[in-house]
Image (cartoon, rainbow, N blue to C red; front, top):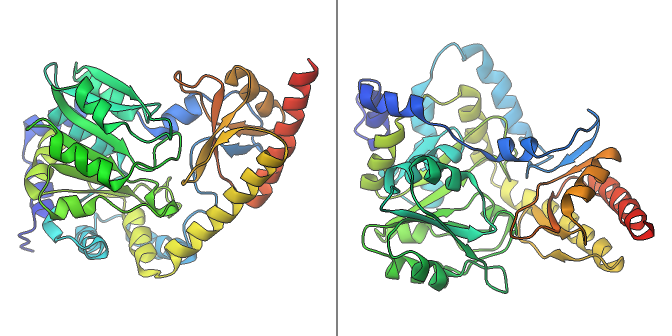
Length: 377
């Protein structure tokens, strides 16, 4: 079948490009589950795990049914289904087919972008605290990693980021930010785009945007700016174990991203589940409402008991343990609740994922007991 779209062509042409294939084989990626579970203490199999920003609701019913239906055909690559999903996703976010490229999650385009645009002479600039995946990729590229503290309201300090790295290759904005769950205004992102060094890329990771009311940065892609927006089905859509994500950018930028990392065929189960999820017109609003309700109830409990946290617009939040957070993390695990890792910039804080109402009730019970025990000690 002849297909003139960029991403379809790049998939086929990549198979013939041995140099690109060698680069992909040499690549090492650091992902959220690697970081989350690598830092997790020993815990019983039945423990509540609220440490990896997973959505406990899992894929929607239609997505689960689609996975079952496609499984007998999983001996085939089903590229037509992948092409159709790319087109469907492009329509859903209001861009052209050529401005979208599909990946098995959003880590691949994040890492590929860093490796393509960062080097010993082109720095990687990120928030502190911030998601670490791009930092590891930049280190492998022998690029300088510039970590800029968040503002007092926990937004990205874009002016400080610009001042800190006039040699920047990539500015990374996660909005809402991982691990704080806080927002950076669209006007600040626009300022960064308009004032960045000429050859730099602004990468906006919108993995958690569906949980918030924040405006997307996709309009900057439509305007032809040097912006790459990342989206994933791992979070609100509950497909972390199925792996589906997208990069949204000008076709020439996507060409460079693929030029470094190439293309690998998508899991057909992920394609089927993502397609079914997009077809559910009510899914986003329903999932967002559920997360907001449980998160709000958790914050009310924390407030009523005098515990501090950073108010979040995502499916996770940073919790002040008042001590070295690692001690509290270990104590929580012994009580059957696994909470998230520590960032060096905020050593008394642990990142807690918003689970189900039942899971958060177990979290509250365990955290209350651990904190009372710490105070008594």
